[in-house]
Length: 237
Ligand code: SAM
Image 1 (tube, protein in one colour):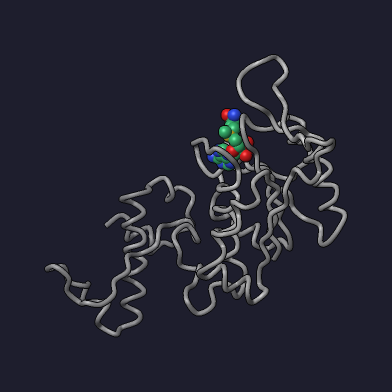
Image 2: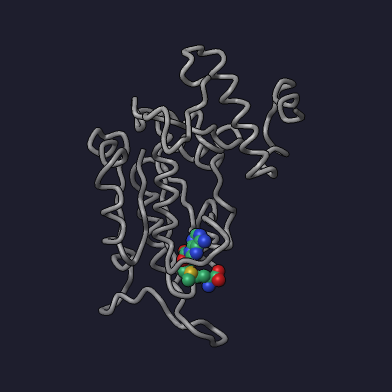
């Protein structure tokens, strides 16, 4: 799967993916991540990509022409990309979006800067995403958060080192707690059932803990989660 960032600061986007699981996935050719410098599509000697806002006000705004030219070029070669605009005004990014986007062959992330971008840039993209109700300096970190969340769902990326199926939010609930050695740490013992070797009992305990944890921490998630009759009974206990 191909991930591309369209940014004024391509160097920002290199290092987060160099190591760890995503770095290995790049080495194996499962994913490819690259950053394009928006300035390469700007015209004139000074390669200007931003300008002052009509009507006055602080800050600079990304001009539409370089973004339009860049997207025309990117769309005219390789697999057809889905183009995503990073904006705090976009659809809040959720795990189900990551699951859908992981089915795409190619994603292009348009990263804003300064005060944002000319409104007409919105007409050039397929979707607008926000990574939360706060404002970042630029769209690069938002794009990298989304790339991380999507890339780990690409088949083969997690390998044997983990499965995304039971992660928090994968099925609308939070994940159950995890424990590792030692069996007792500062008087806190691992629940007996996890040492029992009884896989059926362990699965039931995990499901109940998932429900309990979600009820305690994120009861809002239970409204949309798909729950069995047994789940409902455990929730009511
Ligand atoms: N003035 C804009 C507004 O109030 O909507 C915010 C501009 S912000 C300083 C600069 C750029 O950072 C945005 O154009 C966007 O690309 C990115 N950005 C900031 N916060 C973001 C968020 N929560 N999610 C996604 N992108 C964000």
